[in-house]
Length: 282
Image (cartoon, rainbow, N blue to C red; front, side, top):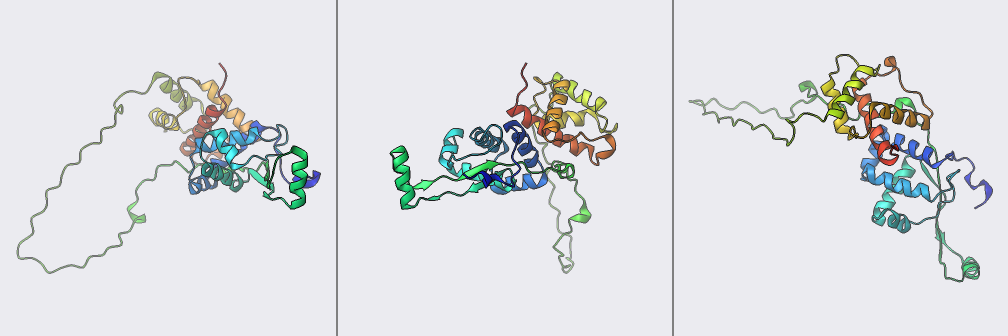
């Protein structure tokens, strides 16, 4: 590749910085919509991202020439999934194709044979890791908010006309009483480490309102999948600091958070994904 082939691209300073930025971008509303459209799980996507980053230059993210087949074998999944993962990386602005793959000319095939002795018909695509910008306002603060039913926003399309009155009122069907859905373990208390972490979050985070109950915080932490048995409150703050440092952003203050509950949901999901791929050493 010529020296100016990567001109104009925002290349990462390290693989860890690129993975942090990729995780933040995919958690935005636009990133989540792209991921659902491509139809790939977040954990699967991050596995392909780790493999893609391992094949790039450690300092500048250049020179990725692996094929879809090679990437699929590295992760242990299908070629179609590898193609979807790369398509999502490019849609998020985290991967750029510097030179598309093509068939070699006759002269190029002879030169390739003279160089390595084998027959080569195609040249691989050349890709590079890129760093898209992430704005604080683009954080996915409203992905997991509970939508409460509002009858005024769901008008009924049907407007049945009144029929002729009957001589006698029709017997009403007896309403069947709905059974409460049995969720295994729902009546059991949360684990003690989870209770301690939720209580510490509810009492220490300045942007959480006082009316947000500790039980609600427990539910948010539990649904995020964060491992409260392994990570303490101090570990969670360390993870958030690492994510913010990787994105070159400062954490929000109490007056900057418009929806504290939804913001906590997003921060816990980011911490869970970060702890999954970058576990803290004991």
